[in-house]
Image (cartoon, rainbow, N blue to C red; front, side, top):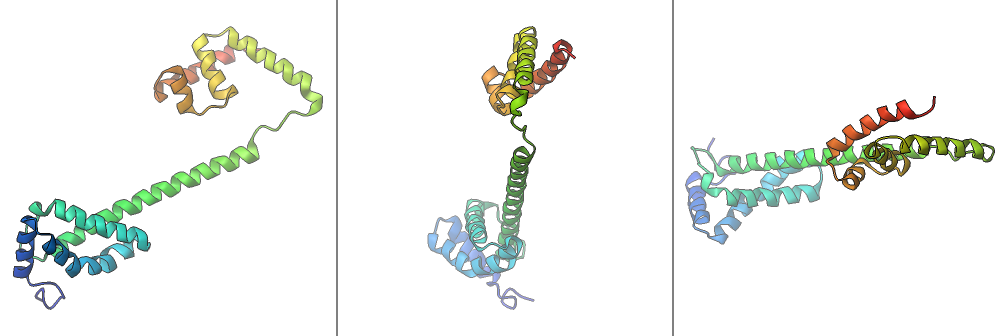
Length: 195
């Protein structure tokens, strides 16, 4: 089957267009878009994304990338359509994976909020005020007897309820270092807190 039989431009016309694009001719780039843009959109991009807006963005990216890389294109007896199609598919896959990661992140965040709302520490009953105050006093005495760096890590993370990144920044350490400090602080606290 020839290019003409498959609805593709004859190879010699394509090569002429490619040469003109390489020469910086915008009209040639527009002609390539008119020739294959709709076909790429319907056959390669939209079926993989299922979202018209994202598919349109991927189509634009496909032609932008193709024009940036036009010097790398080698016909090898095949239509440029197949080269464009490979770029489009790769870009669509990247966008699809990115959306999946975003959704997973949003779901995790939503689940964490739900857990915090439903499993958060309830307010103390009015009749337990003295007990709460005694516990608070014991915690403070234990913290003041510890390495100040460990006590700070525990106060930031557990008492002030800051997220790990904030705690690390407040202590002037990396997130990984903060995690190590917090782990050691928890072990140290167990040793000094009354049983």
